Length: 73
Image 1 (cartoon, rainbow, N blue to C red):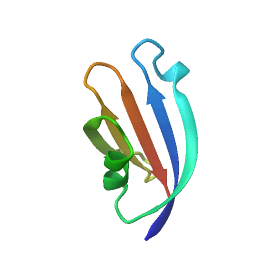
Image 2 (image 1 turned 180 degrees about the horizontal axis):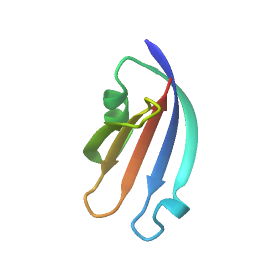
Image 3 (image 1 turned 30 degrees about the horizontal axis):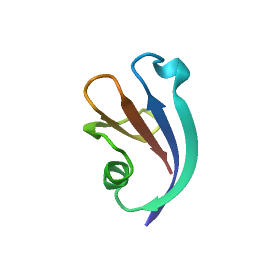
Image 4 (image 1 turned 45 degrees about the vertical axis):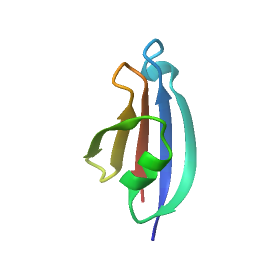
């Protein structure tokens, strides 16, 4: 299993990214997408990778509430 440092951002439609609740956790998992699905109250919206190789999993309700998980090894 890989160990990731994960930034979790909870964004609401009124506050946007500037007022997101942010927290860091250390996670041991083989599947970052499965971890995000299990630890978010929202459905999966997007999975991408940034230029640094971090895995970004975005979940949301489709109406502006988003939880974003950024996995860094």
